[in-house]
Image (cartoon, rainbow, N blue to C red; front, side):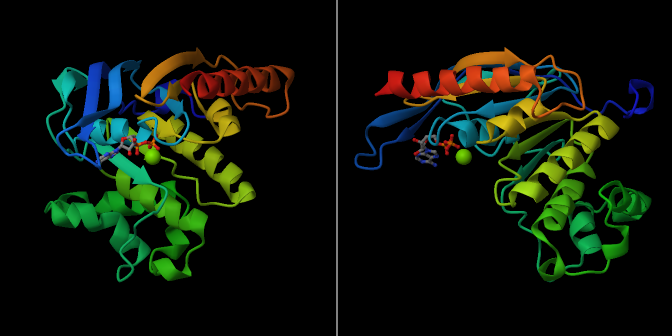
Length: 265
Ligand code: ADP
Ligand code: MG
């Protein structure tokens, strides 16, 4: 385990204040449908917080607003002391699909953002550092079609982390992986989190993943998307998936989600 003195603590606090977002209804663009309703959320610097909730409760919408890819209908979002007004490399986004450029090598993919921003000359030494950080130094010259799903997702993580994000937004990043790879990748993400001190917000459908990884779990409910409850996870790391405390928390969250699902309809 990495001690706090050796980690760079790159993360900043994230604050979401009374954020609402609505979209035009698909059958009638004059009508607005609320996707998020007065969401308040605070994530401390270098915390890892998970969001769980049924499809359509606004998880991706919330991440897109934090990424600056979409604008709020009302409310405010802040990273540290800066309001979010648009996209910025300091807020990284990783999706279920790693979205690698198939014509570039692993190294080419990791440095693509630096090339686009004209920073490669200055930051070339970091490319090898991040290749090593995700354990892909022997695959630097491989192309994406030669990579397993887990390896491709490690490239996507390195590509985001090389920008030294203050907040890393993860939208079901492990959702397409088989169960064993997924558990290994959970440890990998935790290791990166501890190594960089990046603030992470992780959307997942997997309650075990949320308990295994997070400092807090935010439970959302749909129609409109709201935060139902935030649960602090105080279990020591590395966590034991079959411990009494783990299983008890799992039961409580399942009950909450079941109850929340029934309450909606
Ligand atoms: P989740 O990620 O939790 O499954 P989303 O954030 O994707 O949920 O969607 C929340 C709600 O907002 C859904 O009802 C969805 O149909 C609606 N929505 C999301 N994006 C758009 C959009 N660009 N236009 C219209 N409706 C949208
Ligand atoms: Mg989604």
